[in-house]
Structure formats: C-alpha cells, structure tokens
Length: 270
Image (cartoon, rainbow, N blue to C red):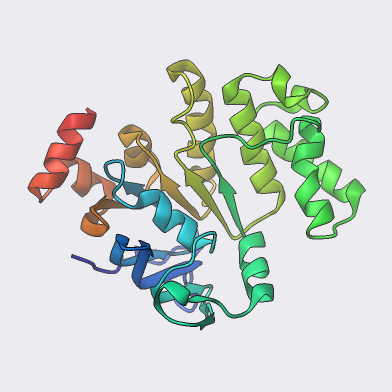
C-alpha cells in the first residue's frame, strides 16, 4: 500500500505555491535481487517533520539515504523543491545523470547519522566549520561565528576547542547536529540519531531535536523512539517490508492504529 502524505494546512512556513522540500513518488530500491523499497511515496513540506518508523529491515534508513541520493534507486521520481532528479540508465543501471545537481541537492540536505562520524583529528569547532568552508567556500570568519552559534544552540558552546574523544556520546551527537545545521540546509535528515546512546545521553539529543522541530525546521526522522516521533512529528509513516503499511498524523497513528501490523509493532516497542 502506498499513498502520498496529505499535506497539513498551510502555515507561514509553507505557502500554497511553495513546493515541498522533498517529494518522492513510486520509489523502488533493490540490492541485486533483494527489493528493499517496493513503490514508496513520501512528501516533506517545508517546515514539517516526517518520521519513519518500522522494524529493522523495513526500508526506513534506505528510504532516507535515497532522499539525499546516497543510494541510487531503480524506479520512481525524486524531486527537491520541485526540481526532478535527472537519471540515466534503467533498473540496477540507473544513476543520476547530473553530478553537479546531486552535489547541490546534498549540500541542502544535511544528514545526521547513528554514528557521529566526527573527524577525530579536528576540534569540535573545526568539525562544524569544515564543510561550509571547504565545500561551500564560505568566509571562514563568518562560518566560525555561525559554528559557535550552533554549538551554543545544541548546548555545547564550551566544547568548541575540545577533541571528539573528550566528549560523551550525547555531546558528540549534538556536535554532529551543529555540524549539519552549519550547512544551513533546506532540510535535516536524521538516521536513528539516538539509537547508539545510553538512555540518559539519549535525552540530551532528544531535547535538541524537539527544539529544532519547534523552530519549524524541515526534518525527516528515522527513529526507534516512538515518544520522539509522537511529540515532534507532523506526519508519521510506518514501513513494513518495503511498503507503507500505514501513515497519518501522530495522534491517529499512536492512539488509533488501523492495521494489525502497526498495533503489533507499537505493542512490541512500548
């Protein structure tokens, strides 16, 4: 079962004429003979948070990686702010046709991974500054000011000159979020950002993600944390074996699930 997300009523963040930041239709993704996504639709309107939930192997992380073209899909359409990704080839031989387009899209879709992926030989401040300076060619002084601002936003301004190994897991993940923010992207993509953390450290990161949602940032969130998905999402998608089993606003999804699979999943994760 696939169906496009029903866009919420227009807000100041999303005018009627503004295309969604990400729109995916009929997406198929396979690894050889293993089909992971079997025709999935997803829409992330500007200023909205879309959460992807489901069991391990359901296709959540693969769908997220397809959003910013870290993975090639074999069929379906991907649009970024109304602009269609251009492809060449078919099936397992399908690849983006325009590398410059891919680079431009990726720089506007910052991803935060389960593992923090900080460069160990750089200070936290240098980690946050690196991509805007080297990839976007922004002025280092301006980037430093922004980087310190984002480190303060995530609550680790005092760690700017520390090395990653000196930080806790929660602090490292918050540094990774500051690094993503410093690119000033159109959307943030989170791939299980708290699953590698102890419960106490997890809450540090959850608070940051909730604060970003309250600011009206566009986010797609793959998470095992049902409370986080319920609290900060505008729309929740439940994936099962590469298909959308059920989707809707969080109140409906978590309070009145319609399918037996979603009810079973929520029961197992509660």
